[in-house]
Length: 446
Ligand code: MG
Image (cartoon, rainbow, N blue to C red; front, top):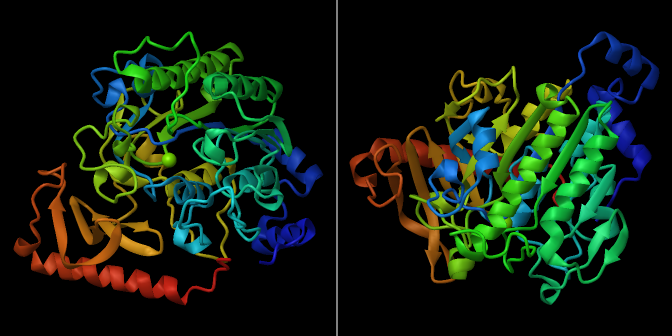
């Protein structure tokens, strides 16, 4: 695996026409004074939280007043997807704007893995850094734990958190600050609160410049942990306690932005990497009305709560019912920062700023969902079609595609493929086309 040294990366950015963005300091400084400061971005990213796990998405047992307020003051999406149903590929898509099959990060990484995000990729952190943002990643990284793959090598000025899932290393993973192990094993019961404090400290220290706070919580991925003051409080059991602690953290961050007078110029977003881990029983979340959960491409695995607040820009109480995907956040954030997405490679995300404002239609006529290297399902308008599935633990090509009408059948219970042969054919040909395009792609993948 070849990794470019930092100078080559700089040359690459310059060759993409990014030279003036943050790299020419004097010019950028003069420009910055003339221009309005671009918005700060706070992206709170839960792990394995389901579509039905917040009050504002219908939970009857878990109370999330802060996230509900965030939604009430901004926009709540009903049809927001993540690009993968498990941790690593979902994060790869989120931070590159590209379907994970393009970056080769198609499966979950483990402590023994010797791979990770390639130098070639331009992460959200790198792109925003090039526009003068202060950037941090606080929480679970999961895009490679070896030094060359860590957040501080991929556009984040500061890192605090676990480099992979909390059930790895026999459930006793080390806690890092930048490249240093600061606690081993990490005390997981206080993680959510410590992450929150780290985010608040970063915001406070960088209040006078644009910042990106990427806050991928370790929770509610099992094993679940919560501090004493949240334990036993939620009607949703330990899982509910954990979510209510995350909700508290969102409230603390909102209060910090308010205190510092940054509310009006900060886009705060909340979502999760994939659906609930249903096989964990009471320690897994709820997909609400959706079918199945984590590790599947039924709606429960990939459709997530998505909330965004930006006072003065996003009208309060907006509900967006248009399909959108986590890949879009990359492009949208870059555009807000005044950065063009890389032009030398396919970027699959789209700018969804108008959807955030409750206007217009989805920029996607089709969304693709992969498990590992294989395309399993697509969403096109009201339709969802599955072309692969599982037989026990095996992933198989379905003899006949399954087609569901999500407008009348959100739970994907009734296969209507027989009634819509032309539509099935049309979607099959789109799938063949994208598979051929990706097979022919020359993007480095390892
Ligand atoms: Mg996850």
